[in-house]
Length: 206
Image 1 (cartoon, helix red, strand yellow):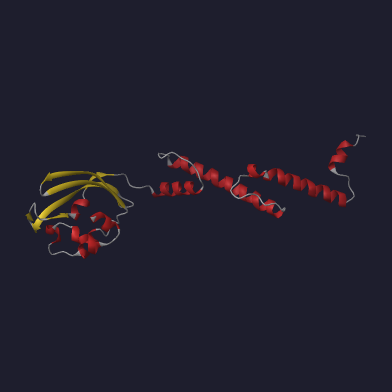
Image 2 (image 1 turned 90 degrees about the horizontal axis):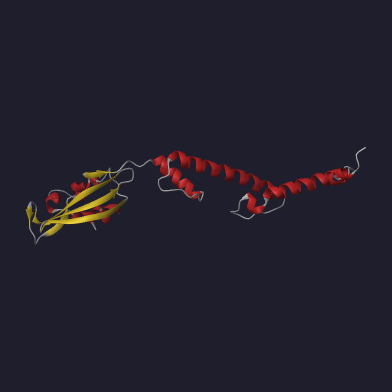
């Protein structure tokens, strides 16, 4: 519950779940200040160990966006500050959450942005794809989309509506353009009094 409230930015409510010793002479503002540079995006409880009847250690994975780590959250049962009591109230020591026991590698923002772009382009890629490989995939797909969009606009001007989401091959756009251009050339030749290219080809060579 404590981490859920911290994630939601509800520090007033989260403060009621902190350890009494930590909370002594502090307020929810102090709790908010503690997490000022640690904007919690997500978390997961990995394991929990009852050390004694007044202490539990919870191993949690914390996602702070650019930084991720695992920490052991100390949850203490106290009746008063500095007085543990099995019949007291359980509370989290917030400081323990910011002490990493396992550091995860920093997030490569450029790689994440490329992955997001690849998803937008409906590209499939392995989870462990390298930045170089995904850059190539995205670049090739963007060129394909650019080429298709150019064909799409050209055939629209020629009076044909391709189906959205299809590739040039699906819509036979290149064949359509070629046929239209041949028709236009034949029409222009006819207007100029020239024989169509097909008839010229059939004429015997002199």
